[in-house]
Each structure stands twice: as structure tokens, then as C-alpha cells.
Image (cartoon, rainbow, N blue to C red):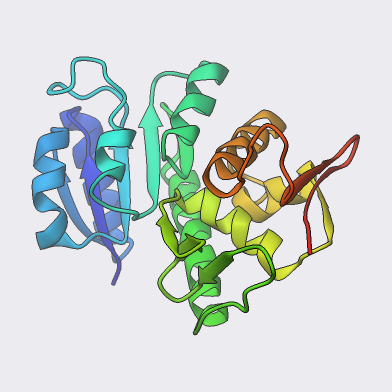
Length: 228
């Protein structure tokens, strides 16, 4: 049974989520503030977090960076804010998916299960450390860690998934559409702009000079590839 932590201050939605997911055999814990959620992380040990974007104790501040300081558990943001720029910003701040209110419970469950499938694939593929090419970069797939020249690099879930795809398929060109499908599946929100932002963040973390990338190369008109 997977553990779900809901951080949502809307009582009606929070209770509806709790009842539905409990009925779907999830172990659900719900709190109303970001600080409460952080305090419960160690106790609940969630497998996924459902996070409202506007919480009463943050006065409009996006909660994703704060939550990401404490856990790398997948986060699905649930919000009334449907502005494209805010969605992209939230994904780049650490969310793994974004769903707008109102939404169907079946769609939410499908998105949660899609994230769980990707985690399981990673677990099965990643029993050990991927071989290190001549880049100074090592991926520990089991512990979901990236090191660059011996230094650990922190990444979001989606950034790691992109890096793993590149790393295990060095020299292969991936279109933006292929990267979208690898990250989200056909039903979840992500677009080409969000992929580009994730790539830019990865470059800042692994490249010597992100403005002149030598590892993740842009293939103009197509997409990206990781150099041998």
C-alpha cells in the first residue's frame, strides 16, 4: 500500500481526495499547511505528495522549493492556477506533475500511477551504478544520485529521469516529443518549453560552461543528445 501525503487547506477537496484515495487502497495522510507537511515527512514516509499551490502559511509563495529541500519524493501540484507560465515555473521548481482544479479523481489516480510506474522501472533498471563514460559523470541508479567529478549534484525527479535517459543512450538523438513521452506519458502536462527548461537546468549542474555545452548538445530542429 502506497503512502500519500496531501497538503491541501481546502477542507472539501482535501476530504474528497482522502476518501477517494483511501477507497483506492492508498494510505492517506492530510495536512493543511506546508510546515505541517514537512513535519510529517519522516513519520508518514510518503511515496507521493499531492501539493496545493496556495497554502495559508506561505502567503502566496510557491511551496515546491521548500518541500524539495526536505524530500525527493514525486510531487503532483493541484491548483486553480491554469496559467501556462505558472505551470512551467512550478515544474521547474521541483514539481513532477501539475493538474488544474477542477479535475477528475480518475485522472489524478492515472497520473499518480504513471509516476509510480516510472519509479518502478527505475528501480528494476537501476540495481547498481551505471558505467562512467569519459565525462566525469556517474549515475547511481539505485540511489538516484548524480556525481560530477566526485561531487554530488542535486536534481529533481524529472531532471534525473532525463539524465538517466541520456546517460544510458549516449549518442542517441532524442526529439522533444520523445522526451515529453519519457517524462510524462501521453496524458500528463508537459510541453516543449518545459523540456527545454529542464535541459537548461541540467546543463547548469553538469556542464563546465552551460552557455557552451559539451555534454548535452542541441540538435537544431530535432532535439538533444548526450555526447559519448
